[in-house]
Image 1 (tube, rainbow, N blue to C red):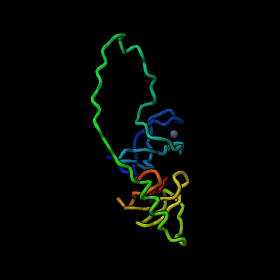
Image 2 (tube, protein in one colour):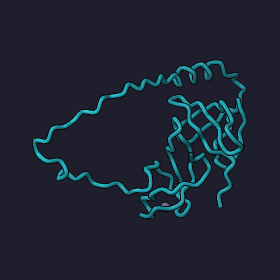
Image 3 (spheres, rainbow, N blue to C red):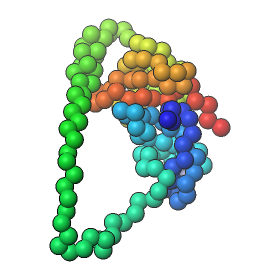
Image 4 (cartoon, rainbow, N blue to C red):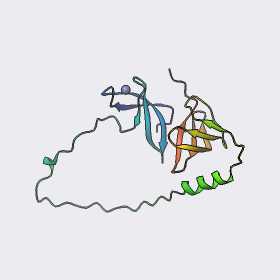
Length: 148
Ligand SMILES: [Zn+2]
């Protein structure tokens, strides 16, 4: 299990190599965005393999496709509702902190993220990661990261 703020090997599209990246945040416990420690580029985490073009040759014509049974996985995303409630209940004088991976936040801090907009700190997971409620989803964000 990789925690936000920790290093993970990922394929960097700029460097064209598998390099050490810092995990910026996770969504639903899946690494979502990473930052290349070599070139500093931020990108979506795609694992350690470069994108491979699908080869159509593998499938023989007329082969019977076995359909995998679709396992119903219903996740109710009530983040937009919760976020809306928080925004409407927020005191007008509430200070907005701008998000920085190097800063440290605590529960009830209101953060202005350059990409995701206003987010509410819901829970601290460790001294390096926090759950934040944004208007589309709850994200596990890295914080207190000292980049070299
Ligand atoms: Zn890179």
